[in-house]
Image (cartoon, rainbow, N blue to C red; front, top):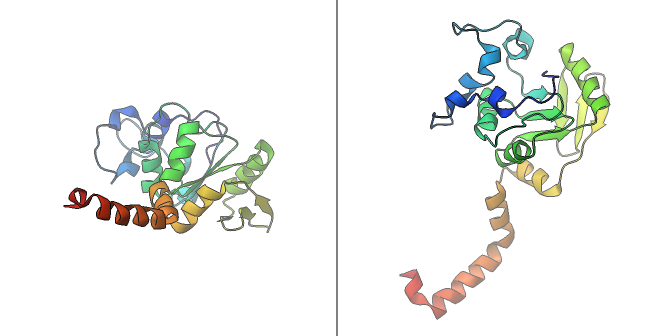
Length: 190
């Protein structure tokens, strides 16, 4: 639960950690200035440090989550922490795209439905995401539907990134082209 608006990518993954070259251990830097004090100790009041939320896979956030710079490391750090879905009334445009490109589900919900989820989460009630049926199921059985493009849904459901998905669609055309080119220009295929 991060109900405030305009949480930018520098808050999610502070710029001073951008020199790290590996995606591994990025979770250590996630929300660093909010999660840790000056001595490196966890701040008990930060939601992801609280026992009920340390293993969270879903973040429910305020509007314009992930705004700011086009820092893909923000998504990498969230994924390394174990976050698989972020629900908010709106997202920074590049962050939203980066989520899909990194197999994370960003769900846009109207403000009233987001507030309903925040209330449920504040009581540590389980929330289930059903991507196949595009619904969020609350502990009391309530369904909240959400929209997602068919291409992004297929990517997440199959685990294929954009390039792999496109290759699977066009593989016959690619093979036909390559076979023809091998006959017409064999020197290209050494």
